[in-house]
Length: 171
Image (cartoon, rainbow, N blue to C red; front, side, top):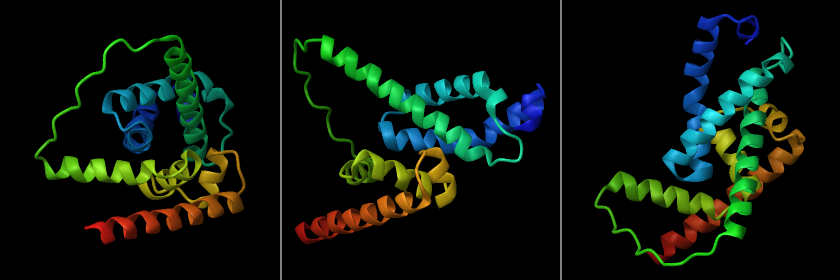
């Protein structure tokens, strides 16, 4: 990141190639739509580029980038809500036909299970388990304390256990 701040093109490329898969997974879990996730990832990289001078050398880079990503997601959500509030739905679209793909069904199930969590808990779980960030990094990225992250993760794990056990009982 320090070399990227000094306009080293190879460092910028390496940073983008290394962090983009984590960002994409983060946004896919949050958005559940590949196109939307790609757009949010691009928006995040634009913001990182614009704010690269604010990165403090020696600090972990992932929490800094994920804080920017989190704010990009929040801003996008707010913008979508404003648009939805001003639009009126005219027709109801037919539901999409079910796919025969097992991996698609599994992915949908994971998204459904994660969707049962409150947004703040889902965000913590995605950062911890999907992107592999530490509790301290997640705390920095979400502007909260490590204790708060642990509490959200604990509550999310409990809720996920409950959801999975109820699904198991139904099956």
